[in-house]
Amino acid sequence: MATSVILRYGLHIERKMNSVALLKNCITKLAGCECTRALSLSSVKLADEVKQPAHIPHDTHNLMTSPEAEEVRMANRRQLITIDEPDDVAVLSGVPEEHIKTRTVRIYMPAKNAMQSGTNNINYWQIDFDTRERWENTLMGWSSTGDPMSNLKVDFASVEEAIDHCKKMKWDYFVQKPNVDDPKPRSYGANFSWDKRTRVTTK
Image 1 (cartoon, rainbow, N blue to C red):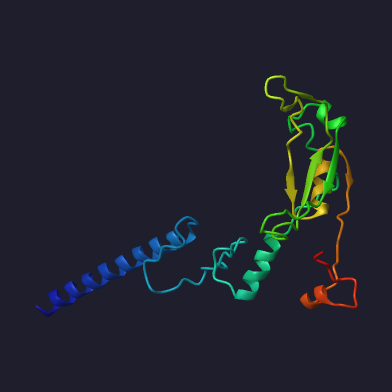
Image 2 (image 1 turned 135 degrees about the vertical axis):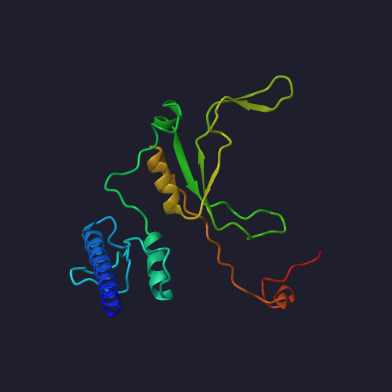
C-alpha cells in the first residue's frame, strides 16, 4: 500500500518536472524570436532580455509641450521661405507680352475722398497703368478704349509690396510721392479776429 502511494507520488512529480521543462523550453524559444519578444507568458523576466529604448518621434507637434516651446515652434513655422533668385511670374501669368514690356505702372497713394469718410481707409498704395488711345463712342458719346488694363487698380499695404509686385510681373514703374499737408491748428475764434487776416468780411 505504502509502496504504491510512493510510486504514484513519484510519477506525479516526474510529470510536473517534464511540464516545467517544456514550459521553460517554449519561453526560451519565444524570447529568442524578434517578432514575439513583446509577448510574455510569465511574470519572471529572462536574463537575456534586453530592454529597447522607447521610440521618441521626431515630429512632436501632437504631444503636449510647454507654452514657451509651443510659441517658439509656431514662430518657426511662420517664417518665410527665402530664395536666392528674384521671382519671375510674368511668363506664367498669361498676360500678353505687349502688356508686359510696353506698359508703365504708376505707384501712388490715393488722396482722401470728398465724402464723409474723409481720411478713413486711405493709408494704402495703388497701382494703375499708363493711358492708351481712347475714342468717343458715336452712339452715346462715351469714351471708349480697347485697353484691358485701363480700369485695373490693385491695392497694397505698403509701397515695398507694390514694387515687389511690379518686379515679379516685369513692369516698368515709378513711385509718385504723396502730397502731405500739415495744417496748423487754430481756434474757431480766429475767424472773427479784428487784427488778423483770418477775418472774413461778409460784404
